[in-house]
Structure formats: C-alpha cells, structure tokens
Length: 173
Image (cartoon, one colour):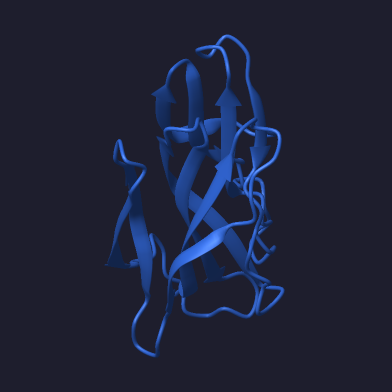
C-alpha cells in the first residue's frame, strides 16, 4: 500500500493470515478549497501464507463514482476474518463526502456502503459485494459505521454495523 496503515484487523487460520487496514495519506498540505483526493483514506488488504513472514497486498477498489468533483470517496473501519478454506475476507465501509470549493456548510455525508471483499493471495481481491447502503436525506448527515465480520467454524458469515450521525470537526463561518 502506498501510505501508512492504521486501524487494522487481522485473522489467522492454519498459518494463513489476512489483514484489513486503513491506508491513510496526509492531506494537511492541501490548499483551502482544494478537492481532497480519493486516496486519502483507503482500505488495504494483505495476505500471508506463512504465518506473516512474507506478505502480498493490494487496495480494495472504489465502488462509488463521485456525484461531484468537489466530493471525495473514503474507505475505512476494516474487519477481517478467515474461512475454513483459507479465503481471507475484509468487511469495510465506503463513504462519499461533499466538501471543498462550493460547499458552504462543512463536510456532508452523501451516501455510504458496507462492502465485503475476499482474497486468497493478497495480490488480488474480489469485486466488492454490497452488504448494506444508506443515502443521506435532507436534514440528516448519517452514515454506516463500525462494520464487523465474524465467520463461524461452519463458514457462516455474520455482519454488524450501525448508523451513525456525522458531526464535522469544523464548520465554515
């Protein structure tokens, strides 16, 4: 992954290891009003066949197409699990945020999804499967947050997440 990793989740079974992590780029050098690039916060997926001695990794694909050039797509909150066949799974959210030039109300969540990818090698991931989606409505600034994944010994997948209100850290004067 091209940027430092944070907020990681790891699962292991029989020496095979999968990690889902947030890859975070420093956006502090952006000029006021400059659009935030879509690679600021992405989900990286890594896989090891040898108990973590060697790794391959790739980025989860973006599934949203921006509604406006001033928007950005962010991914985060990965949760990893391993099935009995050695396939690694990563559940995460993807959010479209409106801010930048022309946005006079501070950041606004437009829509969010909970997505699921899988890998057996860390070099490629499956196209994300959509588990849930939320489109923000007028007056609400909610998104799907904190996705969690558990796979039971019989390979049944269980998903959980919550709908959270978004309160921007700053609001323009």
